[in-house]
Every structure is written in structure tokens, then in C-alpha cells.
Length: 146
Length: 392
Image 1 (cartoon, rainbow over the protein chains, first blue to last red):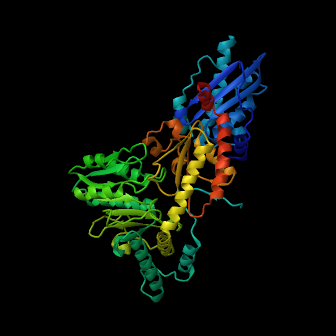
Image 2: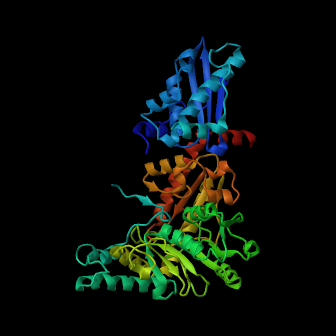
Image 3: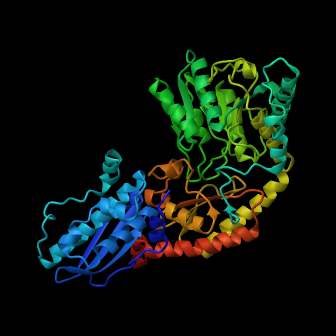
């Protein structure tokens, strides 16, 4: 069902944990749907120097979180903003259609953590002004898209 | 392939050697079509007849009350749709429960679209229906009560005999989906007032793709599959001879070893439940503590999600399931766990381990040890666990 890469990131997830005094924290998802992702960012001079996550969810949710942390680590804020759910899924060598929402969750977790950073630090981030995080509808959105 | 620790007997069972041995001659040697006239076909005819006798004996039915089908889902569909269409002039109301298998629920939903009225009875926290509610739901229009014998996910055994008595008192037909019960529990269709009963071979060490529907003598039912005159004009299609032979042998074996297997499996089940509860915190047993199928263990592990649990167990070659196998294809938690009142986030963390006659205490010790490590690992990753710990 899952690619080797998904299984690898599920069994040996990278960057699990929390960051004390994180510069940005983003939590998305909903326990009702069976997945919650929480991402912690450390940002210095516009660069994401450290990132950690905690996730409650299925194998692909944990793998997507792990992959997302790998993708943002060392990147600038603008680069991190460019990371889409498709990029996360592709980096994992694909996800089953019914699990694509996990990669959406990962994309949203990054953006929500950046939004939190922006609010805390007063640094404006282009593209985040009118982003809405609608956890409830995630599954439905992607059932239609898939 | 290394040895798998198989704890998913409610999903399916391996075909036992004795069953396979009896089936084999009916593939290449005695392959005659039972409906043909020549001598070769006699072997198939006799074999089907013998299987029918064995199935009937196992549930205290008569031979001519057993109809072979392609499995449990067909039997359920046939019972419900066949009775509904036969009795539509008498009434269009059916009573079932919220925790039935999808073969029953979706057949009822299909009839609902055709204008039938369906009552879905609630269950209590253990998954038991209320006999009082059942009796109150019966109206002049009620033609059928369909309540499962035992639940496939949480193992709860329904009060079948009492349901049968209520059905009889009100002159309503009673169907029971006994797919999980046949081979594991004693069944007497006469004493229990059962009018229709569904069963499947592959849950009792028989082959997949074959089952049966018991229909009490004198009860009229429309066919589901139209065509040839097989199964006394009730179920068309050339018989799955080898499969039917397999069902017959499997059910005979199951009932000749019933007491011994029940005692052994029940002990293992209680040991498994006890070990999990002792070694892992924040768990919940789903279903009834004692009134449950001998091999069924269903637990919720708080703060983690079931699929990640299954994948991790699979890495250790442990086969289990989360809710029913059919449920794992969708994103919603099991309808059974929601019906017994579990919140969504707890229901997502369910694990079903269903034991069989060949499981051992050593296997259980291994599984519990791995499970403890896996649950701990997943909880360390879970933001829900983090929140719960902060709250403590």
C-alpha cells in the first residue's frame, strides 16, 4: 500500500519532538478525523534553522510530517512557503489517493507555524495574509480533487 | 516467508488440512456438473448432499432448509432483499441494529431508497441491543427482524434466543447474520426460533467464496440470483462443489471440537486482555467483558491512531486489524465503535486481535511485548499524549 520511503519515514521519522521557545508553532488537523500535526520552527535571520514535529495519525500522516520537516530545514521563509502538498507527496514517492490529505496537512502545518512566527515577530510573510485553515473540510476537499 | 503471528481470525482463517484434503478431488477428478445426467456427476451430487447434511446438523436444521451461496454477504443480501420483496404486500418495515455488518446495513439502506422503512436499533455501551426497544419497534408493517448473532468487531453476543421469542410472539420473521458465530458458538435454530441464518465457510477454517443461508421450512423467499434450477430453484448458478464440500467438512470439524477449542481460545483471550491491561496504560476494552466471542479482543489505545499501530505490528509480522477490514478502507472510524458511544478520537485508536485455535500463549506474550513498545513509541510522537500528560 505504501512506498518504501513512506515506510522508512514512518518507522524512522526525522525530527520528532518539540522545540522549547520555538519561534513559530503550527497545529492543524482534528482528532475527530484521526490526525493532528504540530510543527515547531526555530527561525534565525529568515532561515529555518531547526524544526520538530509531533503527530497523531496514520502511517502516512507521520511520514508526511517527517518529510515536511526535512524539506523545510535550512530553507528561507520564502522557500518554505513554496512547499506544497504535492512536493511532500512526491518526495515520499507518492501517497495513496485516500491519504493525500495527509500531505495537505503537512503543507498547512508549515504555513500555520510560519503564520505564528509572523504574528509573534511582526515579520510580514508574503502569501500568508489571507490564508485560512479549515481543518474540518480537509478530507472532503481532497476526495473531490483526487 | 517467516512465520506470521496471525491474530485476525475474524477477518478470515486458513483452510485446515483436513478440509483441503476433502475438497481436492472435486477439482480435477470429480468435476462433473451436478445438474448433468451422466455417472460422473453423481459424485458431485452426493458430495453436495453430504455437505448439506453436515451444515444442517451443526445448527439443528433439516437438510432441505440449507441453501448454498457464495458467502456471508450474499446470504445476508438474499435474506433481507428476498424477504422484503416476497412480503412487500404484507408490510414494508424492517428492524435491524446500528452495529450490523455492512452486508446487512447497506442492503437495508438500499431498501430504504426503494421506500421501505428501516429501524436501526441503538446498542448499549457493550454493544447489546435492548429487547424492550426491539419489541416497542414492531408495528403492523414489520416483516423482518435482522440482528447479528455476534458482532465481528467487538465480539459481543446478542440475546438471539430472546429476540427469536419476541419475533415469534409478534409473528415477524427473524434473520440473524451468524457469520462470526457459526463454528464458535453453539447454535440451535429450532430452540432459538431463528427463521433465516447466514454463514460463511472462510471464518471457520473453510475456503473463501462459499457460504449458506438457512431458511426455515415453509418460509417463502424470492431468489436473489435468477437462472437455473439449482438449490431447489432458489439460488441459480452451477454449484461451487469443492467449496461446498469444504464448508461441510469445516463446520463438522468446528462442532466436533467446539468445547475443547472454546475453552482453549477463551483462556488465551482473557490472558491477552489481562496482559495488555497490565502492561499498557490508558487502554479500554471494547465490547462485553464476558459475553463475547471466544477469540475476540478489541481495545482502544488512547492518543494514537489504529492504522499506524497496524503498520508497526506488521513490521514484526503480526497480523491484526483496526475495526473491520472493510472499515479500514475509509477514513471514518468504525460505525460499531461510534454506536457503543466512543468519541471519534478514541475510536480511531482501536485494535482488534482475533484469536484462533492455533494461537499460543508464547505468541500472546510476544505480541503484548511488541505492542507495549509500539504504543509507547507512537504516544511519544503524539501531540494528544503530550496534552494529556501536561494535564495530569
